[in-house]
Structure formats: C-alpha cells, structure tokens
Length: 155
Image (cartoon, rainbow, N blue to C red; front, side, top):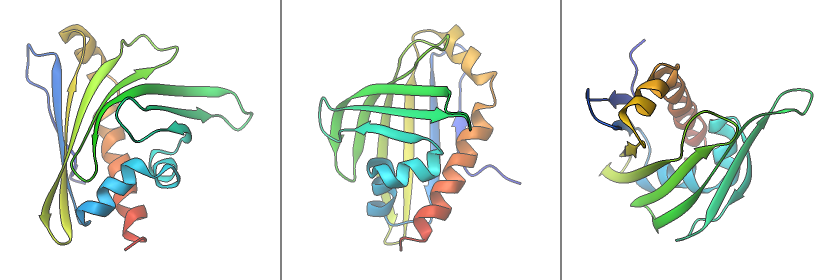
C-alpha cells in the first residue's frame, strides 16, 4: 500500500520535510491538530494539556493497560495562526532524543482538500538519522491515515 505521507530526508542535513494531502477542508485538518478530543483519537494518546496560543504549552501521554506511562511528550507553541501555521518544540521525556522544532503549515488546495507541510529541525544530523532508523515513516503515515478517517466522520 502506498504511503500517502511523504518524507524527504536529504543526506547531510539535520532536518526532514513531511507532506501529506488530505481529502479534508482546511478548517477540519487544522481542527485535528488543535482539538484535544480529535488529537487523542488519531494520535492514540491522552492530551494532558493543549494551549493553542503563542507561548502556550502542550503535553501528551500514553499508558499501557496497567496504567504505566510508556510515552510522554511535551513542548511550547512559539507561533499559532489559525488555519495557517503552528510552530512548536517537541520533546519526548525519558528518551535519548533532544528537543526538536517543528514548523507545521496548513494549505487549502480546494474547498474539500488541504495539505499539511511539516519542517522538522533536529539538533544534529546524527540525531535525525537515529530517529529515522525507527519505524518513523510508517508510524506517521498510519497516524495521518487515522486522522483522515476520524475527521471524515466530522464532515
């Protein structure tokens, strides 16, 4: 099955570019990133905090069936323009990865299609390459597929 989420990671650079076109109006795609109830569904994680404003913060957490925390991530939102862009840091707690900065841009393609472009910058080339060794591409594609399916029901 073709991956609809495209990842471009040029050799020798400490960044990746992720793009995905959705069969969703721009407003619904953006809502999927800012409404905690929707984020929880497509990311399969609990939203502990999501302050959608400049200098707001966020925190996500995933637990196993016994309630043990298996994943926690947080960051600061540095810029927030509704239906256009989110600039934020992203840091996984208790993981060997430094914080990264993410530039998310939302673009209207037509009344019922939109595009997400993510430019992610890592502290080093080695750190970026280490992350890409994980099933990162498969995971983000699966999450974006869930986003498309869940938000389709909101139309």
